[in-house]
Amino acid sequence: ELSGLRVAYLSGGGGGCSVDPAAVGELRAAAGGAGFGGVDVLLTCAWPRGFYLKLDPSSLPADLLPDKDLPEVGLEEVAELAVKLRPRYHFCGGEGAFWQRPPYRLDARSHACRMVGLSRVQEDKKQTWLKAFGMVPQAALGGAVPAQPEGTTDCPYPYAALTAGGGGGGGERRGERAAKRQREEWVKDGRGWIAEQCWFCTSSTQFESHLVTSVGDEAYLTIAKGPLVPHHSLLVPVAHKASSLDLSAAEAAEVRSYISAVRRCFAARGESVSVSVTRLLACGGRSHTHAHTHAAHGWLGSR
Image (cartoon, rainbow, N blue to C red; front, side):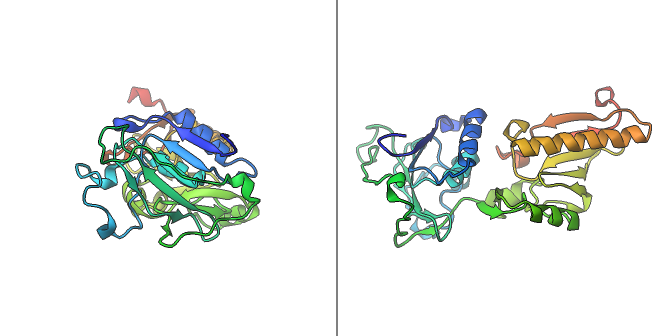
């Protein structure tokens, strides 16, 4: 907190560098805390992936990052945090260019967010690197939500807040269990690089649901499309998570439960204990990743 303003920041991610997963995890946890109402300011080095979406392409200035492919600019992690942290202002400077995006809304009842890219300090006198703004801290508004300004767009980032279930479908059993647990869960929708690039996300057009054998609240079990051994299965978190370090307590518990169940299944058949290997997979040659665990009878190391 700074002079009454709630400020969140994430360093790293500029110049092609990655961000610290632990730092991202801390911000995710803070956003998921009871009574969290958002932050006033979010500071990041990297720009959020997909910042230009929901805008008329003709409205984008011709000199906006002219040497870069806009779909490849920024990081998914920053886009996710820009949604979960609900900032009123999001300042980012990693691209070294000034550009102020029209405000966007998370939903009809929330405040608008203004994303502002800043140039490097005094690198180019034509580029703005210092931004002055006046803001009443959110805590001082007494719960009032400022009116959304004219020209506010829908949120450009492919995340949505849902009540109940943890994303993905899976039959009557899953529907019954999800209905009993009303909670807010963040899931990705079918836009942009999410659905097209990740074949583990249930909203992807490449998702092969006929291979899925069991769906829980937090994870699902599927037959491997290219098995290394007979009965080779994959255990995948429903929500898009880059590694096991990003799993919530509930997700980690369900993954362990699935692993134990698979081991019991093989043991009942008189076969050796399954081997589980957590793997980080880059989908489509991008930084977009979805962690999964392999389960197979026998010792994979001998094959």
